[in-house]
Amino acid sequence: MAEWSVVLPILLTVIPFSLLLLFLFLIVRPRPVRIPIKNRHVFITGGSSGIGLALAHRAASEGARQVSILARKTSKLEDAKREIRLATGCEVAAFSADVRDYEAVKKAVEEAGPIDVLICNHGVFIPQELDTQELEEVKLMIDVNLIGTFHLIKAALPGMKNRAERGPGSIAIMSSQAGQVGIYGYTAYSASKFGLRGMAEALQQEIIGDDIHVSLIFPPDTETPGFAEENKRRPELTSILAASSGSMKAEEVAQKSVDGIKSGSFVVPCNFEGFLLSIATAGLSPQRSFLMAFVEVIGAGLLRIAALCFQWNWYQCIANFNRKR
Image (cartoon, rainbow, N blue to C red):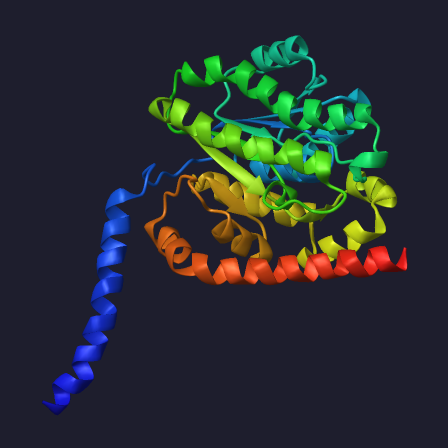
């Protein structure tokens, strides 16, 4: 009897968790997949600098058959081509186009040839309170970050669906942690990034039958030339609230992104805070890993409490800032 008094509580704990793991293993969809980079055509927008350039380096280093980069400025594209060739020995195809121009994007994609891995990395970030921000800046962020992504995917999908050597394909979309939680000063930017999530969730259902898999990447503030410039006009309160997530180097974000693409992950966090955010905002998003689904199920309640604590802190900061102002 003494032995059962020890064993029984253990069984009562282990069995429910084991049954939950088995249940999750059976129901998670889409099913797990591996997406190779080696000997594939990887097409990257915003590829002339920052995260995009780091992604191009990463893809070339991992043996991509063809790396194509797209950006607006021809001079920066040429510099990026030379840099990647010197670092990896890989020749890179470069295309100059504005993602807001669908016809220009379509022409570049058709010239590049069928794409195996499409990484929509372009974006603009102009932080400011909505009541003082020009509507042209709001429209710019929506047009580049959201509509520009529609343009790229719309142009690339026919070729991706009709590749001669199929294998699993990937469409990776660079969002932001501001696409998981709204922050003061990011009203327009967050709107453009939150929209990507709805698009990605619906798109995955539409193209899963073509063996094309969507990844949604959520980097924090990233140390790039563009971010340094745009950060000069960031509201003071925005900097205070956003500081809790820290920042990453472009190369670190690129590595996390490529790892997430190769594993077919729908949500790709880039740091620990992003990992917690991905659990807290899992909602109805697809999940391939039954182990990650287990963490989401178990951790959701606790992380909701943590999220409410963060909101309390943020609103205290806002109240204190407004009193001083």
